[in-house]
Length: 131
Image (cartoon, rainbow, N blue to C red; front, side, top):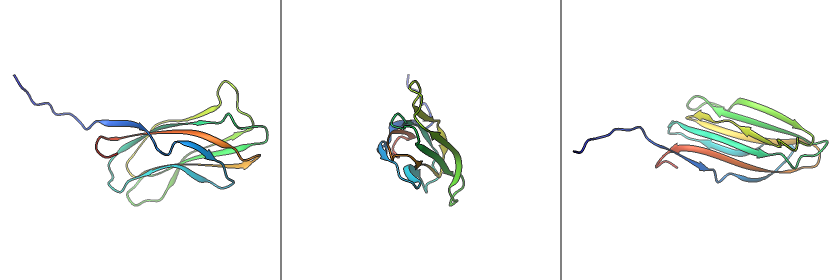
C-alpha cells in the first residue's frame, strides 16, 4: 500500500569554498561571507580558525557580523581578541552556528606582531537545490 509523506526541506551541510589559508593584514579583511537577497533561511554552521602560528607579541581580532533585516546594514554579532602564542592544547577558535536569512560575515585583522597566515574551515547548511 502506497502513502504520501510530506517532509520539510532538507539542509545540506558543506565545507565552504572560502575555507583555506588567510594572510593577516592590519585592517579587517572579510574571510567568509554569505548573503542572500531571497530571504531564504540558512545556517552558517560554524568555523574553525587555527591560531597555532601566533607568537608572543601578536594580536589577532576576529569579528562576526550579520544582517538581521532585509536590506539592513551589517551589525556586530560577536568579537574576540587573541594575544600572543596560544595554548598548545587548544590553539583553535571555534565559531558556533548562526541561523540567518540575510547575511553572515567573518572578518579578521592583526594589529600587532609579525603578520601571520591563519588556516580556516567554514561550513554552511542550505536547503538542497540552493547551494
